[in-house]
Length: 194
Image (cartoon, rainbow, N blue to C red; front, top):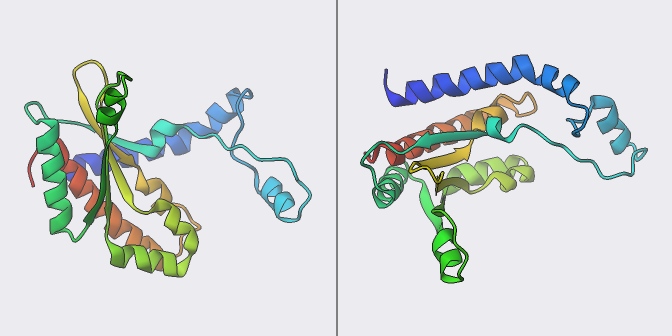
């Protein structure tokens, strides 16, 4: 089974677990804020609820994390991602070497680096339909180490956004294309191959 299929199965099983167990977790945990009910949203739209609203979700379910294959260096992972993205017509918009900047200021931190990629045609198509999608642009992959000798790549789990019933079918198709490309980019980084 190739790695993309494994990632897809992992993401889908994680979403299934979230679907099955998230309502139970919300019922057992009254100490945290929860996703607003439809009634609360309607009240807020009607101006009846003037208090600020806090929404807390399980952050680990909103991320896809991949550990670098043994022997793959951070720079090899970075170059593999940049090359794969370019082959898929995704431009490297920015590369932020945050740990280097923090260390230069005397703040010791594990490796932390962000890569931002964008396909301008996809971005334009999404934003022309609804400006709210500008908040999701550009796509980002982070590299960090866990302090235990493992280096990880992380990105948003876009499946949660794609599976949202509020996304119109014509935009879901664009989001799926973006998601497939970003899965290919993160896989290239994790394996060091492109």
